[in-house]
Image 1 (spheres, each protein chain N blue to C red):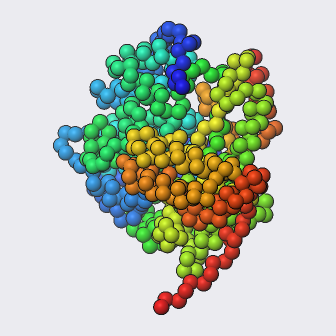
Image 2: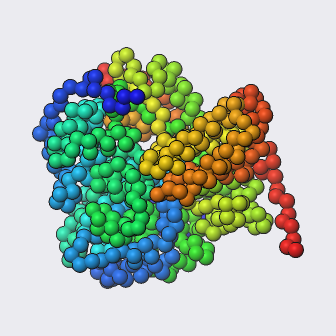
Length: 175
Length: 453
């Protein structure tokens, strides 16, 4: 399986505003320990570009004065970084035990049917993707989902609340 | 109603802001510690309190602090473990969302005790809203002179930062967390050296759970001995329990350790019983990695004693008939739930979250998931149960970090206590995909123990 999809990877530029945010993060660590900024910087890159492409990772490596591979191995290890483009809104539904006791699997079936795309795929309008993720530490409020890039959180889901959420997002996207 | 040491003011409007938190007596522990106590005094109070790590392992916090190496001229670090990811556990999310200043106050006092000048709160990356809440609260505290240079004129300097994770359960293991904080993959380190000697950037480091750090605040305010009067035996103080699954009132509850499980599960003050009038089939008492127990063994120990919510009582009977307090992630299963399906779900979780460093865990978790999947979907064999136990035993104790144990225990305990349900999945494969085994005898009163010969 190809973990890093470069088919849509185009050269990226980091704006001065984005680099200023990187600088602020780097200032939190002792001199010479700037690699500690890697995870937070990858989150900023993903929020900016929607995913973490190979050219973006190379630029992060340059910025932090580390090898490219040090960025690749981290980006592919952690589950939050997208290695290929996703919908504008990624719906991540908790699929772990406690949420399944209160109906998470039915919610995922409903989302699949509602959006008409399989887990990990993007809707033709480019607006939505969805996937099951492991425990989101909200087991008392299940079923739950979060939506990147803001990671806003939705609790005690029902088919109706999911429908409402999706239509609200469509309105938000068209404004 | 028991006194709340952590959540006393949680319902006060605006308690997440500095001013309201302060008006309710907040940051008094910082004033007391920095103005009237030496750092060793603070460590001593925490030792006296008997506080045990609230993240899962239950190691005495004061003792962990006293192991910290203090070589001259070398920085020391305090890192708060807010990578809450254990299925069933959501207490730290709750605490950070509603009482961010309690955690910050605890971080200041604990950092002072350890002599740390820079401290980090490592929050799991998915909790971006909580990260924003903490960053805002830190800015407020700094603005009021409780962080930064020369705090309250004491001469003590502290900078506090929030670090997001990237989505990996393994980073809740303290050395994996430190690797991640250094910008690397979350692969646990081989110990020794322990973080107290060589932790973050190779410097002496203490890693403590959110709830442990928060508990330092009442310990300093009231004194370690007063704190230790709450609770029972070596389970001192209060504990946050996250109640989920099929309980009527899911949520986070602060209990005095030693509360009878009967009261916790069935009183309206806490869980309020099982939702929809159903019966209890099984309980995972301390997060997904602790052994699952059938209702009858959970409510009473094998000797017929009512079980209590304490480290010792939950562990009574060892792994033969007991479980663990763990992180306080309490998951109740009603009579309609399928233990095989849940065990498969947990096995999938651990397979997904194994970092891949150690072969027994990397390979074993995958095999357990596959075998459990075929059992759940009606293609299992009678030999599968022994196979699963065999795989789990080959993982347990044979890995660098406890994730291997955490993956092995739920599988081994499910087969130990629910073997007939697994066998039914084999003998009635077609039926098992359509309906569940039900409560069977799992809530029946236990036979009276045989009198000692």
